[in-house]
Each structure stands twice: as C-alpha cells, then as structure tokens.
Image (cartoon, rainbow, N blue to C red):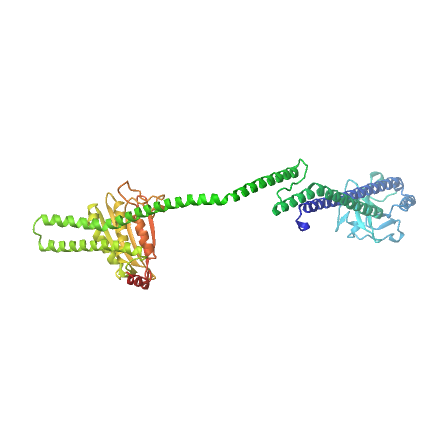
Length: 541
C-alpha cells in the first residue's frame, strides 16, 4: 500500500501541519508583540529625556541665557543613545542642532520626519503640550524615533522684560529629540531568529513524538488488522490478532477474532452440507417436481377459466342484440299480418340477426385464429361504418335506458388497415360501458376523424355518466377488475378493448371526472400490422 494511503501517515501529516502552523503563528505574534514592547519602551525613554531637557532649560530660557541652553542640549545630545537634538523656531528654522551643518536651515514640512506635526500646511500640535512621536528612516539606513516637544510661551516668559514675544503667540519653538532604533531593530531581529529556531526545534520534537505515538497506537495495530484480513482472504481462518488493549482498536481486534471464529464455524457447516448435498438436492428436486406439477395443473385451470370468461363476454354482446331483435320480431308477428313497411323493417332486423350470428361465428373463428398466432382479418375499413354499425346494435338498449346518442363523423372516409369486426366490438364494449355508467339516463357521443397528419384515426366515446374515481383509473384495463356489484359485470369489457387496441398497434387514453362523465380516446395507426403477414397467415388456415 502506498505511504500516502496509510491511516497513520495521514494522521501524522495532519498533526505535523497543525504543529507547524501553531508554532509559526505563535512565533510571529510573539515577535510582533515584543517589538511593540521595545518600541514603546524606547518611546517612553525618549519622551522622558525630552521632558528632562525641557525642564532643565526652562530657567535659562526665562533669563534668556542661550549659551547655558545650548551647553545643556549639546551635553545631552552627544551622549550615547541619541541621534541628535534640534530646536526650531516658529518659522521652521533650525536655531540649534547637535549637527552644526543643519544650523539656520529651514525644515521641509512635507518630509517624513515632520508628519507627526504637519499634514500639508496644517499644524496638528496638541494644545495640551504633550510630546509627539514619529518613526522615520534616517539617511544611514536605520530607523529613528523622534519626539517633538513644543516650547510654549508661558506667562512668566511673555511678561519678562527681556522677551519681545507677545502673549498671543502660543508656541515659541520646537524641541526635537531623535533616538536611533538600530539597537531595538537588531534585538528584534535576534529575537525573531532565536524564536523561529526554537519553534523549528519544537516542531521537530513534537512531530517526532507524534510519529512515535501514532506508530505505536495506530499504525502497528492497523497493520496487524490488514495482515489478518489478508490471511482470511487466503483461507487461514485459524489466524488471530494479538492486540491486548481496551480502546477502540482493541475492541476492533476482538471483533475481528470473533468474526474469524464465526466464519470458521460457518465453513464447517458448509462442508457438512456439501457432503450431504447430493441427497438434499435429490429430495428438494422431487419436492419441486411435485410442486411444479401442481402449479401446472392450477395454471391450466386458471387459463381455462380465463378463456371461458373471455369467450362468454365476447359472445354476450352480439347474442344480446340477437335476443333483443328476436323478441321484437315475435312481438310484431303476434300483432297480426305486418304491413309492407313493417315487413321491410322485419327483413332488416332479420338481416341484423344474421349478421350478428355471423359475428358470433367470427368471434369463435378469431379465438381459433389466436390459438394459431393470428390476429384477425386485417384490411382497409372505413371506421365511420364501424361506429354506425355498433350504434345500431345498441340502439334499442340505449332507448330503454333513456340515453340519447349523437355522432360526429368526418365527411371524408376514415380509412384504417384493421379488423373491422374487432374495432366494432371495441366500440360496442365502450358504448355498453357508458350505458351502465348512466343508470338514470344521459347522452352518448361518438366521433371518428383522421389526425391532422393523416397517419392515424381517432375514435372518441364521450358519456355524461358518473365518471371514474381516481383510485380506480389505474386498474380499469385489468382483466376481471370491476366495481359493479356481483353478477352485474365480468370485468373484461375494457380489458378486451385494450387488447383489441394493442393488436392494432394503437393507444387508448381516458379522461374522466367523478360526476362529470368520461371520454375514451382510441388512436389507431393508418397502417396497422403487415398485410403480408396476415395474408400469409390466412393461407395457412
């Protein structure tokens, strides 16, 4: 396994990064803090020196004894630890300096050393007389701390006869004490170097300790677990991990040993099962053979029942029409000799009975054809005729239930390559289903049109019945599923319609709302199953 993928290495790397970042941050913050302490100490010392100089020269200033003032400033300014001393007058001219080359020069107010008191042409000297400090770079390459102490026009000074300054002038001059920060910067640099070296040493010690600790507590136990799993893969179920610890690693090792024992026991059981497998297989095979024979018998009975129910449903619709018209004919014959008009109607009804009888034979024929993997007599048919024929068969039934019907048929022929009798059967099933949904009367509307692209025909059957509840909709095409009371329906009507549409490679959709009615839409392709295939099938009958 690669080093970077080992758990111990990743933990060690994480701890090392945390230690490095922590010590580096501590060293950085400590150096900055110590540097601020040094600067503040130097600043306080410079302020105190400036105050001492101001107080030492005050008496001589009141007596206007300039030689004494210059002597005091010169003595202090030439002491070690001072960069220089200056005195400016109110015009910004150097009236005295420990550097004699600066005498009587005007100061550039925009220079870095003057930013503590001047910003552009604006003076910001405090009216309380507190010293101002600033840090700037000297021409010698190191930083310098400057303390500005304003020399104010006190009352004792302005009232003195030897002075020509009026009381309106608040500041007579500036005392500038400059202290080099070279030693401070060197100390800070030394501190930084020593601190970072110490931090580096601390990082090395801590990371080494972390390495040894992780090696003992994590890497070695994990390695033992890995070796154990490899032994298990090789099939050595007698291998045990010897980790005597009470922590999570120890519990994991004990669980591993328990798992190995269970695997060994399971393998022994499997071995015993394998030895008697042949006998067990023969016994189970005999049981399965008997169960299979029983299931085959049950399936035969179920298939026979399904076939009988389907045949009964398919034959029931045309037989109902035959029975209805037969009763009408008998009633008219009992009324006496029929008139020519009535005789003509009776001939049409007898023709209808003959046609429906033929359709019953076709249904049986289609069942026989289905048993030979045939789907019907497909040819070019005008679906308008199928709509009209289905309505004729159910006309009397609709009148008896007080249901009015209307049609919306295309003026142009609705030609589809289909089995006309099957389409008529599907329409008749939808019409009977609609009539049963309107027990107290209503209206039924059938339409037949070609689609806009002319590639399919669209048949619609719309009723004003009770509608289909949403929870029933997913099941309406399932065989034997019905919501009618027992004996009032077989649950095969819509499943027959669905099967006819499927055999014609079409689709069926339903749009229904409870109390609002239902619309079934049948979409049949203009060119259905191959005519060649059907003609070949017919030639084999």
